[in-house]
Amino acid sequence: MVNTSFIEFLARNNAIRFGEFVLKSGRSSPYFIDMGVLNSGSVTSDLGKFYATKIGEAFKGDFDVVFGPAYKAIPLAITTTLALNGAGVNKKWLFDRKEKKVHGADANSVFVGSQNLDRGQRVVIVDDVMTTGGTKFEAIEKLEKTLSAEVVGIVIAVDRMEIGRKESALAEFTEDTGVPVHAIENISNIFNHLKGKTIDGKVYVTDKLFEKYQGYMKQYGAQQKF
Image (tube, rainbow, N blue to C red):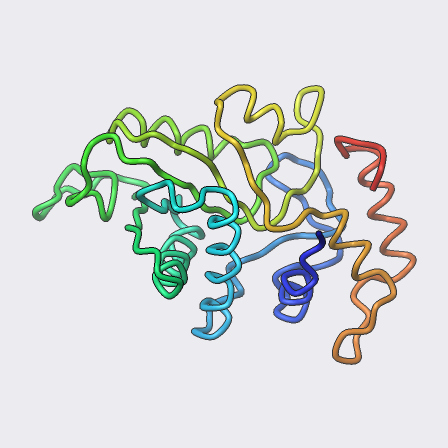
């Protein structure tokens, strides 16, 4: 089922932008997902509710911690735990540092929020998107080696539906790690819902932009139907 509320939430708040963007992968994309613009109290709260709903559907409360990789996913982890708590599900949040802290009670720790965690906690990672999965591999390794944590899944905002080595980057990631990835929405649904649709007096996806998207997916998409 298409999550039209989430799609229009992204569009209205400019969390999906259209144009020409060079990604970390080197690919030139006609759109860009930028969750960093969702920095007001109201939209951050709404975003957490979308993530909490998806986590509830995927894991049914069978996890202990929500982890957000530094830096953009740090507020994601916190707002998601707040939204979960509002729904009666009390979980802990956790995020990492780019460098170890050298002073204080948690000196040498690469994590914030780990002091009161038991070993072997079940962790859900939250992030914005996944293209190649590089940062997610690093996060899983860090959590497993440092905290003996079990990563039970990843929740992202948007599945870009792009090819990895030979097939879907998300499918390859799960095959390589055993960790399932759940997306609140995928880019096919986003473009198809927004194409020609007027939202608050604005058309976000014109016919010309949709053609560019189709060309991009023919080159980099993991499947031919988009």
